[in-house]
Structures are given as structure tokens and as C-alpha cells.
Amino acid sequence: MRFFALLLAGLLSGCAVTLKGASLSYHLDFVPAIRYFAPDRGPGATYFLGEEVRFFLTLDAPGWISLVVIDPDGRTYTLDQFHLLSGTHVLPSGAYRYVLTPPRGLHRVRAVYTDRYPGSLRLEGLYTDWDARLSVYLEASRASRYQVAETHFYVY
Image (spheres, rainbow, N blue to C red):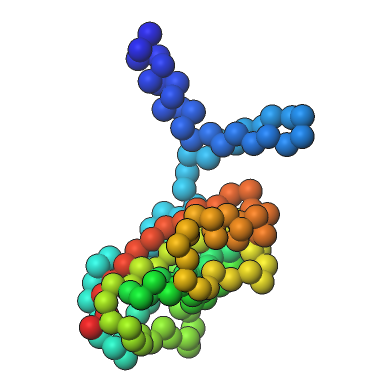
């Protein structure tokens, strides 16, 4: 009996239960939209001011990606936002470059995936509650599927 309860709990952990009016719906989502996200030198890599950084991003499904940077001083800003098809991508694409500027230290980068256009809302500022701000962002996009992946690197 205990095994059955653990098995059932494991299967239901991939469910999202949504209440809409008087109806109850659920959504099974066992496959993450973001399969891989890392800087070109790997997570935790070291870069120097003035160098360029690129990111590898592998998506399982097409969707909107917002790259959000959290600086060592706690400042958050949206680096880029675009629609990508499923597959592996090198960001930025084309002639664009991400050149590293101060402050020095640990830089965290979050890839925020949504299945719908997030609109004009941007994740920028100093946040004490990232999850609350992300909830507002997701509500504005009316996304039915979302995921956040984080990587980091150091700037010296």
C-alpha cells in the first residue's frame, strides 16, 4: 500500500491543477520546455570585462524566451527577448553580441520560457521577491506553459 501511495504521488507530481469557475482541469507536463541552458564556457565559467558571452539554449517546444540577468549588486534587467523554435540555439544570433560590463562578480542569468508572447512587461529593477514579480509577468503573458532555467558565470 505504501508503494502504491508513493507511485501515485510521483505520477501526480507532474500535474498542474487549475480551478476555473466551477470546473476543474489538470495538465500533465512531464517534459521540460528548456532542456539545456548555459554560457558558452559552461556554468560557473570566468569572463573578463569587455569579453563577449554567448549562451547555449535547447528547447523542447517553440516559445518565447526572455533572458534576465541578476547582477552582483542585485539589479535585475531583461537582456533580450525573442521567439525561438524547438532545437538548440546559440544566443545571441546573427551580428548581435553580449559584451560584459561592470559590476564584477557573480552574474546569474535566467531563461524564462512562455508559450505565449509576454507582452511589453519586462523584468527590471531590484526585487526582494523574484517569485512574486515572475507571477505578475506570467499573468500578463497568459502563458499556459512556462519554465525558468538559471545559469551563472563570474566577471573579473
